[in-house]
Picture 1: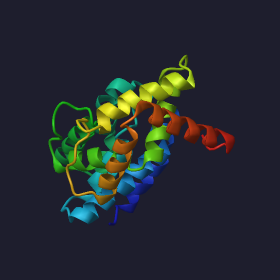
Picture 2 (picture 1 turned 90 degrees about the vertical axis):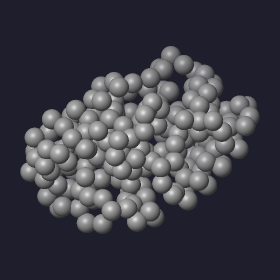
Picture 3 (picture 1 turned 45 degrees about the vertical axis):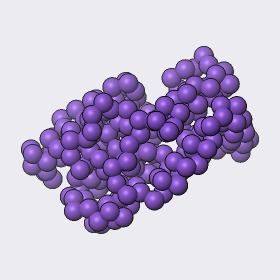
Length: 214
């Protein structure tokens, strides 16, 4: 899935460095993960889409997270849409479609993404391993609730992840995704018991700290 090399170079040099401002759970490692997952979904579902648009949407989707986590999808969409350098690669109509896709990517959004592009990045933005959930929810808690103890963060993570991935959770499927389906089974089993979840996250985070991987 070939990306315009000039577009790729521009984003790698000018967009990726901005992610140093975000907490690690929404940093450049996460962005590269979402880019990779986006193209895995395209391949698995044989989707007919513009690869440059998919790449750009995934690259910008969390760029405003450090400004305001609660409205980051709106901020990120505006940053992308206001980037006049992208007009070298995209028409105004494509810019608008990408803006809407970024606005629509949050799993907690009260409406379905307006285009296939929004559905791709929204789906790719999901965690697909239990370890990712445990790590990212902990890092989010440390960044946004600095006065919380680790135990308070674990309990908050359980409540948040249960709302998102539990049996009646708001995270939605838009495409066939065998990796995500397996993950959902695993995380739901862990979320059946709050104490079991907190113990699993505690052990995992302690191991990351011990090995300087956090």
